[in-house]
Image (cartoon, rainbow, N blue to C red):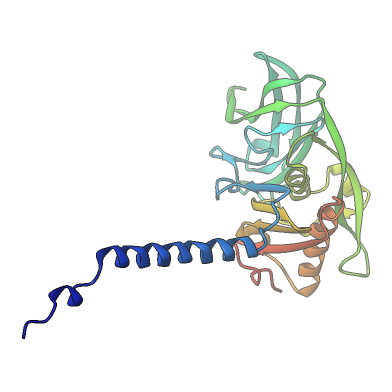
Length: 283
């Protein structure tokens, strides 16, 4: 007896139909999952240096300049900070616009001894706008020539907004007691980043004379800053944690950063990390 061979051979049209049905059902499930998952809110401000900002920013053999950063937009006065080991500790600086020196002065580095680096801080007022160079150097004791010159390209900006920078007050009996000073920053799409950069630069000589101080190492670099859903995640270089002595210093640093960023209405919470590590800032 010969069986009907067609009864043992699957219908190719039926297999194709089942395959199409299974594929279509799978796509339906994927779309259903995607539609049901809430999309994360877009960041309101994002800045990443990708590790490009390190301190000191520019150096010569005997002069290191930590601020301002090359290529940044600055308002008057320019905050100049760094360290030097030069003859009689005199550090000169000048502003060059269109190949002409429009302002020049000097500051004394606080070197502990001959041949050792000492910090310096100064500010330089200007009335110009557009591209410029800030030169930091010293005059040779031998022949009066310029030496150790660090040249920093800048963009001078006259359009600015005023923000508040929070520093600790010298002599305060509480670690998190901070007070605000006003600073001008260029109008930019990333005002929080520009404000934190002013915080890192520290008090001006006048503010320091008025009792303001900072617990943030001036060599600290801002590596990343994102703001989303009311939370500012700010990541600093490892310099932020260097030299931190005790829980009070940690509390003061956090208070300065938090108060400075919370002035922006979009920021309700601040998360501080060091090289991406939320636990690195410890006493």
